[in-house]
Length: 360
Image (tube, rainbow, N blue to C red; front, side, top):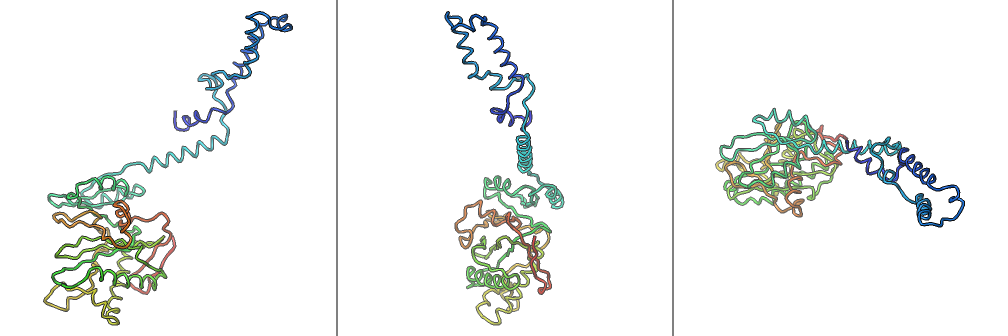
């Protein structure tokens, strides 16, 4: 018996009973009439036996036989109304679709290509990467976001060395990797630098895409130490994302170019430049890492550290994450985790004049 048959058993009460049950009821009535003689039918019930038969005759029309109430297992099945059949068909289709969504995916691979190949065969499957805690060897894992989080959150923190693989061709959010050496850049204020970068970014979004940005769209994660400033910024534009991370890279290159021009007009933006080598002033450049937009890039996950390091990527407590729990921060910080209402993809080619938006 499949789901539809079991469900039909629940609907059967109140549906027209099988003809076999009705025939059985009529047969009982005829049998009862035969027990009453013509003289007894014409005269009132006098003795005890006759009174009993009369009472049964009066009450039989008010009772349901077990066969009528429950249905006969041996009789011809009752007719299923067309509306009920359609409803059952839709329910079965919904159950089948839900069963597909519940299929668990959790498989590891030594090579990235094998993992990506499997991920493309399953809806909503994504590729992650992790490093062995002992030797730092990198492996790749295919799973879905929810399933990954259920296992990831229970791991011992010192064993979390996990990364999201930003797959080539997948829509993604605007993201930044920001870093500099604190000793080589004494006096730099990281919070102030991030705020200045957001000013330039929101200006570019407004000019290129007519999109008004604000701090409620910004997810900020921090893994800074005494020696190094390190933050991730993820900007989740409502109902909008970039076509893939190559277009994000082109847009970030435009932002870096703007930083140079902003510095000429306002010395305050000089704070966005850092030195890679204290012996040479010519090494000053924006603190934005422009190397993280390559194809199938691994980007460290929330609550993870690099193998052999102790600094964990945590929420900074500012912007969008200040009122979120761990799961909400994790989901919001995933670069390729699109909202269900995403309806527009932004494109930006290396020729900055060709930046534009396309509707989904």
